[in-house]
Image (cartoon, rainbow, N blue to C red; front, side):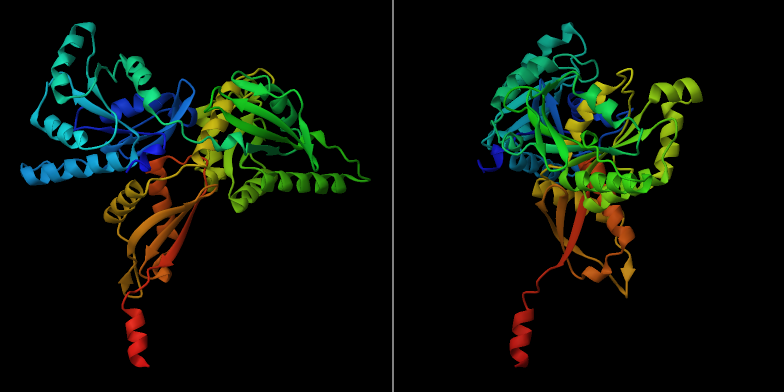
Length: 460
């Protein structure tokens, strides 16, 4: 069990209606807001990579795994509670046990505490709904559960700093793979979309540290930079194809070579920023570049540059622009969208945070227990269609790789999975795990039949 705890994973557990999802939102809210104007309801979001004080970790909201049955059957309640806590213990390095300070200690809190005491994991109690200082003393009652107690208010953002200050040192160091293999970020787009201007502004942006000696690789300039600080800081190589300039005799040759460079930079990248001109909207060439990003299965960010001009000249708002853009490029709806101005510096910091966010999403490692529960919940809500008289059955799911996120689904018959249903499963995975900007590849594998070998041998 200790091997599982080496991941930098925090699980939030507790009985229903104590504010687990509200606490989850409060911790990841600044990260979720990178890709969503509104955080929305998070009960379906099970896992999200986030950071606090530039320390990265995965946060699990067990409230998203299913609620405890509303029936009064004590066995049902205990079984569902046990299941949620078991998942948390399996996947987490540290556990936040959320209680309702206004309700005091109730029998179900004691049941959860009993289960957590059996686990070899650090546990901190977040006594939620301490909405003012007068309620802080009421948190003392929860010390009887045997864990350190922190009065907090997810609603009013009170006490979270003290909780996280105690929690973060308890996380394992974990491995930062970008130390030995920096992630590669390419900026692609049509001519005059502002790639060079954006890159220049980006490298002067807040939270970015640029190396003094950029290196040269093949036909593109690679500029090392770092986001964050300390052992968990992420290291990147910015692929700047704008630094290459070969003259050709005619415009067609120049365009051809430019396309070749863009394709090469996409192939070499881990994350691709598709930069578009806000004043012109998506053109055919933008859609072709988007298709190449999809084919290469790279992490993707949609970035709309020159937003200051669009607001000034076209008098358009982001809430008007985004739906129209999403409709034009529906196949990239999973990619976060950022409006920037390289000229004025508008949203440059947000673009930096989005790069960092998507870089985490493409490397997300989905815990097997949670993955299978999410998959089974999706299938229960919307069963597979009947193909040739029989339905698809998914027996087991496991992650087989990252960059892109690759999942193996062991099924009864791979031919019974329609493309529409596979898209549905991917969409449900995105709702549960986030995976914004990260391509997801499902590989269906027929489950071996244990009796098949005997039948073949008997026929001989």
